[in-house]
Structure formats: C-alpha cells, structure tokens
Length: 438
Image 1 (cartoon, rainbow, N blue to C red):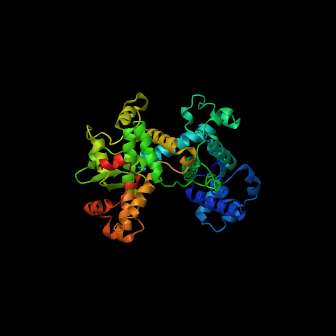
Image 2 (cartoon, rainbow, N blue to C red; image 1 turned 120 degrees about the horizontal axis):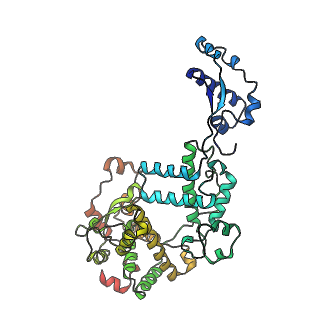
C-alpha cells in the first residue's frame, strides 16, 4: 500500500488471547514470505484477505491453555480502527523540530533542518500525505533542487508560489542565475534523510527512500587553500574599496583558523587580550567549544576591533548584528536564529568579494573556509606542536586518542601553546602595511 502505514486491531477484551493471535498471525504471514514492511506494519490489508481466509485459528491454538480456549466462545473478529487523519508533511515536520529542540540540538542545526523542510514543502506542498512520497518522488525532488537558483528568495522575478512551475517548465528566467551548488544540494538531501528517518522510526512511513537515493555522481567539491598572491590581492581589494572590517576579518581568519560562524559570534567579553586567549563558542563538534590562543600578529587586529565596544558587542560586524536583532521582521526569532541570519548575510558578502578578486572559475575551488586550511598548514610547519595540540587549536576532535581523552582529559597549557603558536609564520600572506602594523 505504497509508503503508507495501515493499522488494524483485534476486537477482544482478552489481552492474553490478543497477544497470542497477533504472534500467530505474524508467524503465518512470515511463512508466506511477505516483505518485512508488510509483516511489521500491516497485519491485514485488502491484498492479504484472500491469503488469510483459510487461516485456522482453532488449529493454531490447539496447545493453548484451557483458559485461553474458553475465551474462543467470545466473538473475536478483525476490525478497522477509526480512519486516521492524513499524515501531513507539515504536521510531522513540526513534531520533528520539537523533538530536536527537546533533545537539546543547537539552534544553528535546527535552522538547517527547517531550511531542508522548507525545500520539501516547496516541492511537495505542506499538506501532502507522507505515504505518497515514494522513491520516484524523492528522485524528482533531487533533480528539482539541482535546478534551483542560488538565493532565489532575493530574486524579484521569482517567488515561492510559482518557483516549482518555473523549474518544471525550464523557464528562461532561471537561466539568468547560478544554480545551487552541489555541496548545498547534498547538505539539503542529508537533512531530509534525517527527517524521514525520524518518520520511519515513529512508524509514520514504511520506508525512508532518501536512504537509497543515488548521489554517487554528485561528488562534493573539495576546497583548496588560498595561494599567497590570491590572498594579497584580496587584501588590496579591501583596501581599495575601504573595507577595513572585511580586511581585518580575513586576516583574523587566516591567523586564528576559526570557522566563519565561530568568528562572527565572539563577544568582547570572551576575549582576555592580556592572557592572549579567546573563548570560542563553536557548535560544529564537541571540540569546537574551546579556548583559542591569539597569535602575536593577530593581536593588533583584535585590539583595533575591540575599540569603543562594550562587553556584549561582537568583535566583528557588530553593526549588522544589532540591525538584525532590532529588525521587526526578526523580533520573534531566538538569538541563535538571528546569529544564523548574520552568518549567512556576512558569508554571502565576503564570498562576493573573493569572487570579485579571483574570478568565478577559481571561486569554485576557494571559499572563506579555505583560510582554515592555510592556518592548519602554517601550524603544521611548527615542529614543536604535537598532533593533539594542533587538533585543539583547529577545533578538531581528539576522541580517538585514548591518552588525551581518558588520561589527560584534554588538559592544555595555554602559555605553552602561546609560545608554540607564535612560531607559525604567516608573513608571506601579508601586505607590507600589514607587516608594519604587527
């Protein structure tokens, strides 16, 4: 019966008999080699009626105790439960989000799940019955995603109500814009798979078709690091355009190795400049929440960004953060949701600057995250740094190192790390005026 879940019940007030009947029925169905989905989710359906008409309860219960046999004098029959409401996508999607919140999932991750659900509802509609979403539907949904333009919500000639029709009819309007990149689509499909896995575990569907979705030919494009001349060109571009904060931010990422979101969520109160440490409130992994050590060449940039700011202000792009916080449109959103909006807005802007400098083709190989590779490579050249120290500074897990996690328990000496990290040489990335500052 497709991907729908059908429930039937035994009309009896004898619990013992009901359990025995259920077990015998399952045993009988199993002997008929029905599929596991049919076996466990559908006891009786129209297609099974013929199979079960010769089902002899008296024979099966031959060895059951007398008390159960006496219960056979009661009229027992199989009846339909009252017809259930439609298993609407929107209803169970809301339940999924509520469950994630209850489990303590970070708001940033929840926002990503909500975005994936938005794409599901954009294509299937919020009122669709989950049972109607089969493998063919999931496969066409995948194709739909690859045809969507980037940042389609910001396009004046595209709106949510007609986007699906535009994609299906190959509207020439869509040709004006770049499509969603492979990494974005694969991320959406991964989130959708998790949502439908929840539906499966709660028996709202019989099968999660996202699990077997073929995406092998869509390989994630690995990003490379910045070349020295590319990064210098980016700094010159920021100078020429008088983008001082962007200039400082790129240098900060290079010498801190922070993820974009981590760098954008640092309040001044988390910085102890005299101790050369920053509390980094990362959420990507358990190791992402850590104490970062400030490199000697990064200190002047941090001091400049801290000027005239209060303890609660952000180190970077504080004006935009305040604007998002106070905007009536975002008034009902949580602080974490607002932070995600800030990250996306700043990320789009910074990636535009990178693209303007290195060109569209090279931009496919580089993004903001590439600076973490540069940071890691510069630190790797410091022979004094141990592997566990390197992972700590980058924010990667050391869970496979039993000595570190079980015995040392992640203990680090920030003074020792400071001495070692200052040995890293970022000089080849600097413009002459930047070198003078440091």
